[in-house]
Image 1 (cartoon, rainbow, N blue to C red):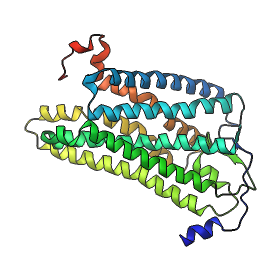
Image 2: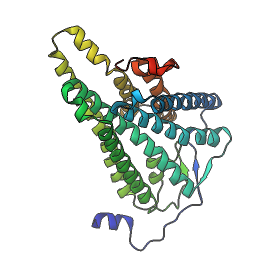
Image 3: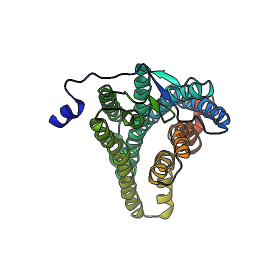
Image 4: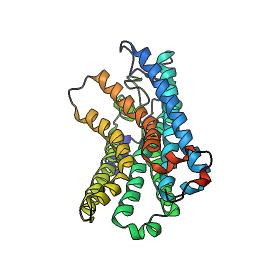
Length: 317
């Protein structure tokens, strides 16, 4: 605690600018086409996630633990893209580069809250698949809608507290040299990086959050699928093993499109700064667009709901 108190300073006057300038895409050629592409991605994302949420809400056969997590993922994707993409288009396509101090912190809060919940939601879905395959006889008792809802609410509470803490630490920073954020939105690292006083608490807290929200969920998912693979090797026939593993393909696809682009971007040290910004923006907007498509194409329960007479469909399918 003494370290944080000394780093933040006890008797200093915080210099809070009236505005920040978001300058991540400025100077990159032919970006107008990219903004049109972002609008297309946003449009598909809104339609897809709204459709998935509507189907799950209307069909009582989908009121299961798995679809509690799927519904929450669609909601988070819809909220996240709505918070991010329209503002990005408005900022760079219409040259509204300046954003007020309070608006920037609010922008940061909603974007990071949704990005964090996407990762933790994948852990909830992983829990569902792990129990379903390794402990099928206990699945109906261990993974109930109430338990899944409790897990989701706990993740929401953690993310809100964590991101609020990060935003609170940013308010303890002074910006007396620069107000230019070299990113496509109010990026946490870019904000505290331009502070003129000690930003060690924000830097340390950022590393902790990256570990908790990115690396630990990835490790949990990988470890779970290692256990699932070992369990499937013990299945009596190859056909039964393949059939069981097919129930995981939708979740694995979500994990791949969320984690792999982030890992590639952060581990490639030779990437050009402009390319890095574009890659990071794509990793933020693509998963919310692809997630509902993946669940419609790979999940039998939702695919069969295209018939208006949903009640005629076999409940066991």
